[in-house]
View 1 (cartoon, rainbow, N blue to C red):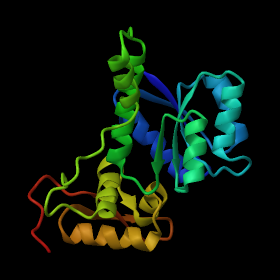
View 2 (cartoon, one colour; view 1 turned 180 degrees about the horizontal axis):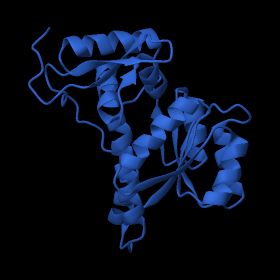
View 3 (cartoon, one colour; view 1 turned 60 degrees about the vertical axis):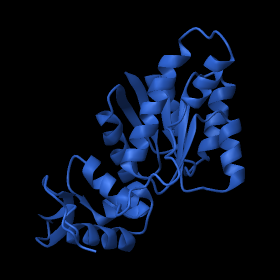
View 4 (spheres, rainbow, N blue to C red; view 1 turned 180 degrees about the vertical axis):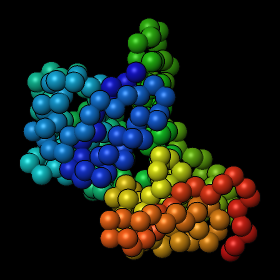
Length: 232
C-alpha cells in the first residue's frame, strides 16, 4: 500500500481527496494536513510515501515545503495539485522533485489515472535497468498517458462538465454544488449550472437533503444504470 498524505488548506477539499485516495487500489490515505507546519509533523510521524500537495498553504507555499523536505533527506514524493498554472511555478515544482503536477480544475478520473501511473512507476523503479530503453520507460511511467489527438468521442461532454460528472461518480455520498466547487476548483454557480445540466441529460439524479433548518439542499448522485437521455 502506498501511504499518502493529503496537504490542502481547505478542509473540505482535503477530505474529498483523502476519500478518493482510499478508493484507489494500492493506496492508503494516512492523514490530512492543512498547513505546512502540520504537514511537517505528520510526515515525521506517519512516514508517507506520497504527498498530494497544494501550493497555496497559509503559512508557507507547498513548493517551499517540498524543497525543505528534500533538503532534510526525507524520502517522500509529491503530486502537486493547484490552480497555479504559470510557467515559473510549474518549473519550480519540477526542480523541487514533484513527480507530477495537476492543474485545477481536474476530474476524479484524472486523479485516479495519475495515482495508478505513480503506482506503476514505484513498481518499475525497483527493477534492474539494462539500458537506455529501460530508463526512458521509467521516466515515462511517472505520469498517466495523454489522450491521443482526436480521441475525444463525438457527442462526449465538455471537459469541465465531464470533470463535474467524474466528481459525482467518484464520491461515496451525494455532492452539492459547493462540494463540487471545492473539489475541482470552479465557482459554485458554475458547478450548479453543470449539475443541473447533467441532471437534465439524465447523467446524475437530484437528491434532496434536509439540514438542521429543515430547508432542502440540492445534492446529486450518479444516475441509475440506464441509457442517458438524448438531450441536446
